[in-house]
Image (tube, helix red, strand yellow):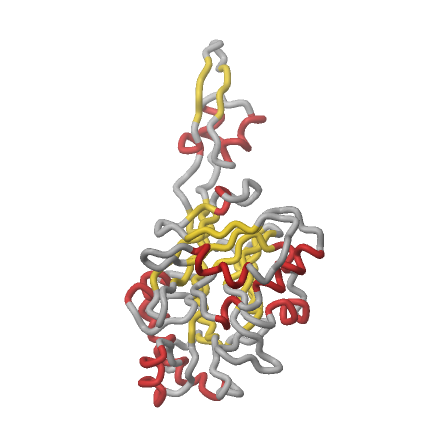
Length: 317
């Protein structure tokens, strides 16, 4: 089961009830933090989110309202006697490095007793278990390009699901029962059959076809673009920039590289997602729900995000 919690839903300027952009995804007690705007720590404590579990901070871009919470968070993790390293991943502009992007922010953290490892997110994505072996090998983080004023990306978190274990196949091959769980976890096994011959079995020998997994997409700041639709395609939950409520703000959204409620909803509809959460609200929009009809006209399952909004997502069936 994957838990997703919005920590901050404000864009550019925080409000008393609305921290700047951040969202946490938790699987098996470990977390990925998407963006880390000002107020992330306070909002997390208010909504009972334990940021000590964070292994990866996935940044969509390097504007202040998405990164200014990082120094304080790292200092707090240090005070909490963290020893485990933390990775900060993000997009890299042509000719640049993520170290250059993060240098001013990380300079504010002071000396830490754990490693902070910046890493440009590979275009093909990465398996979280490549960074931390105790993560599920089926969990991946994949970037997709977005259209903002600076180099930016969104993310899809994918938790794949293996097929059903077929005990009849395992028995027919003579695989000892004590080895079955290794196959179920994706490993090959060697065993001695009834004739004394050494044999090898692979998961494909005893597993049915892969089943539908879980997909969660987080847009970051963006205008409407095809890569956003592709990145969100088929998501169980799509968390999307919706800075402006009314359709009257479409030109403003275009100029500032953001989206309206309606644009986010049309993207969700075209991407055939199951659920849409709107976020990154302008400070001028005191009550986002007043504009929700603009989204629900295009995508009835649209919901307004709010700090602390949370959802558990499990595999189907």
